[in-house]
Every structure is written in C-alpha cells, then in structure tokens.
Image (tube, rainbow, N blue to C red):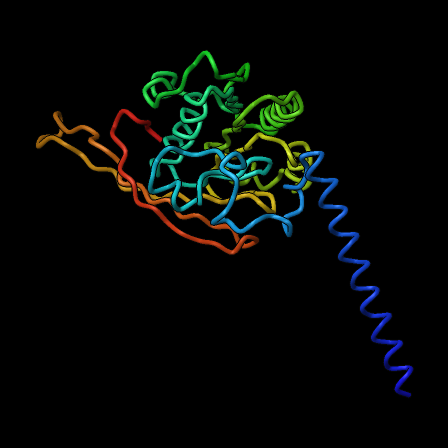
Length: 262
C-alpha cells in the first residue's frame, strides 16, 4: 500500500513538472516571436508593464488610471453619449501618438471629423490616415464599408493607433453587427504594436485584454445673455473597466471648448 502511494505521488509530481516545462517552452517561443502578449495569463502585473506595450493618452490623470495607456495588440472602446468628451479623448490619444512619431488612422464612418478640432488637439495631420465615406449614410452598407476599411488598415500594419468612429450610428444598427466581426478584428491585431479603438455611444465590443473607457460629461457655459452665451468647457469623467484584468478606476478631466464638440 505504501509503495503504491509513493508511486502515485511520484507520477503526479512528474506530470506537474512536465506541464510546467511545456508551458515555459511555449512562453519562450512566443516571446521570441513577439507573440507573448496573446497569452493574457502570461501578462506581467499591470504595475510592472512594459511602457512599449501601451499607447499613452498624455493626460496624467487618465494615464494613471490606465496604468500607462491603452494596450497595444488589443481592441478597446471609448463609449459615451454626445458631448461626453468621447471624441475629445480619441483625438488626444491620436495626437499623443503622432507626437511620438507614430502613424495613426481613423475610419470616419459618417464623415463627422472636424479637421480644425483634430489640429487643435495636436494631431500631426501629415501622420494621420483619414478614411472618409462617399456619402454620410448611416445604413448597413455604410457600416459594412467602414468595417472592411478597418480590416484593410489593420492588415496593412505599421499604425500605432487605428480607430473607427461609430459614435453617431444608431444603436439598433450597431446591434446588427455580428460579434464575430470584433473577434476577427482582434485576431488581426493580436500581438501587434497597434492599439485599435472603437468609438461608440455605448459599450459595444472589446477584446479580452482590451479596455472600456466609459465617458460622461457636463458642459459649462459663459455669457449672461442668450446671444452672448457660449460653450466654455467640458468637465468629463472617464471610467475604465476591464473585468478580465480586474482593475477599475476613474479620472476627472476638464477640456476646453476648442478641444472638440463631441
């Protein structure tokens, strides 16, 4: 009986050692091929993450909340109602990337981008690929065309940030997009240096390692009379959610009127 117990313990220890050796070998191969970010269980703690694995927003309060920035190689989303600061935040992310010399791309589904606001936010327009639709229709055809453009840009590679603006697309239309669409997007950027951002009116999709940045905002006005009244700024709150990585947080920031209108 004792011999059988010893033998059973020996076999269990051998099997455990074999599994650990196999896992270490797999992680080693993935690191060599720069694909180790595809294993969420192999990621280091957020406090010790490699700075190159994220795209900083360059807004201190938000970057602290994000533990450095938006993760590369993942699909994340910025969600919020109109005037919540959602577009302002996206422009800040893209501006920070172009200041570092990176190339960014925006798939402007409904042709909503205000170029003056983009320049005011600090985006180097020479480093930005702006993909516009032939018409501003919000129908299924426009969404399909925008998603195809997104996939083509991601497959081309070489971009630090790639975003698709679906913020003004009706929620009923967005809900018709198959979830497998976002799974395909994640497979394309998995392990890459590209951070893919989805801009929408409500949380729609993110990868297992991605983030949801939920925006709420309150506008402030200047001027005493109705004729002189003008937009002075936006007090925005960014709430970060990522159940898979189990960290939440929020940051309060103030945006000036010329930072963006949405």
